[in-house]
Length: 283
Image (cartoon, rainbow, N blue to C red):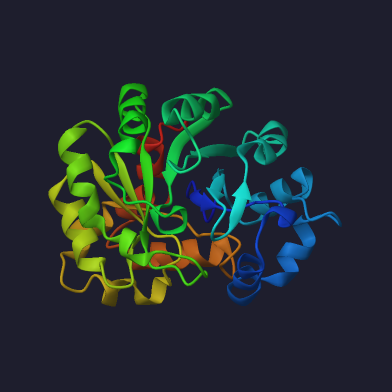
């Protein structure tokens, strides 16, 4: 709880440092709090479960969703198995699966394996993985998510990491997916960061299965990013996430986002309620 409100952070990277390329480490140091990294990582570059759980508790986080990633060209491979000790230690932690059609075939078989390990969602990273979201090779994974009732989180925003393909962040590439999978919840991670804010907002306001996820977006700029849209309506389509460790602090971001909401009910939805609904989390 943070200030009496439940808090869910749906976008957290707790990868082992030896699995990451230097660009990721530079990003975490430039945008995050290096003191926090020193506090939660051990000497081998692995997140210590007890220290990490204590950190989340201190920031008021009730549930944190941790991402695996298989993007060898850009950030490296952070296998889902590396996250299992964190989930085993604390009920606060949930896993998010990741697949890459260039690495995984049959793709639905790999996704099923990660779901069986406890993943509550699927994250796709077209920009780092080097594939468009409407690649038909992904369709078996979309079908499995729809059948299982779990959401698909899609990186929808620019990335400055070397090797990124930012053209694949365009949310219009999801139009085919939303048409072909009509009961699939789609979460737009980073909310159209760069030059797709209007497209992302339009999709979230016009389709009840599309959600804006706020990771990597400075709260002080949110109103300007989405200035052309009905703020009161759009905030009710938002889900809180930080992109930790690339933020100064989870609690600080959450308080800033809550302060932008038009009323207390909306703040509750953004900070936890929408995540509970979309990711089917237990309150």
